[in-house]
Image 1: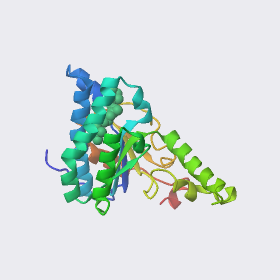
Image 2: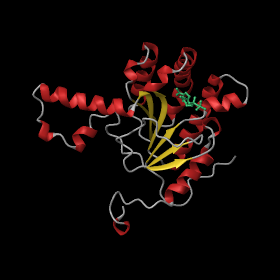
Image 3: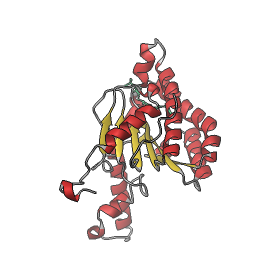
Image 4: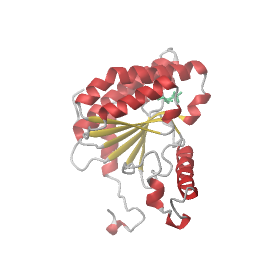
Length: 245
Ligand code: FPP
């Protein structure tokens, strides 16, 4: 499939994706669920390349939620192995392509091997500025909000701030997405119509695009279709249409 290109018009600055449908993709082929996750890593590769080529600046991928720990141990360990495998395989090219890796969520609480790998990938790509790819790892939107509250409370308790000084900007700066713009577009493939504890604070004005395709079949043409759809949305951020930004 030739690159469909970004098309005419602005691209969203920040795209967030809930990479759903890996298990169903595998089941339909009579394969173990992990085969779906492995195939999903290929979709990540194509989507990153397209974002890089089309000038999208931020891509946030929901790779492992705090709720995913309750899956069978075998699947959890396969996902953990896949994370290491993915970073080992992809990091050299991501580095070359100017991609900056970030992680959001309680990723430091991943098993030591994984958290070290993630830390190393963050450090190795810190100076890159073509595209930021943020992996949500051990992430939950509610947990991230609680962590931000805790950080503010600890600072206040240590004498570093007064409750009346807390505002949306100071709160935002304590989320694990601090420094990133809010997502313009959320894409969820696989037909589910939920946000599943993803970026709860950040998605207040995000445009949603739901797609039937399963994540392992998701390619840049699906991203392109989502961007076309996004371009037809009228975003007013609560103002009147004629005031819309
Ligand atoms: C949801 O599909 C997907 C996940 C829980 C994992 C997402 C992980 C990857 C795409 C690959 C791993 C890549 C890295 C970088 C770790 P599901 O299993 O819930 O699908 P289902 O709803 O069809 O069962």
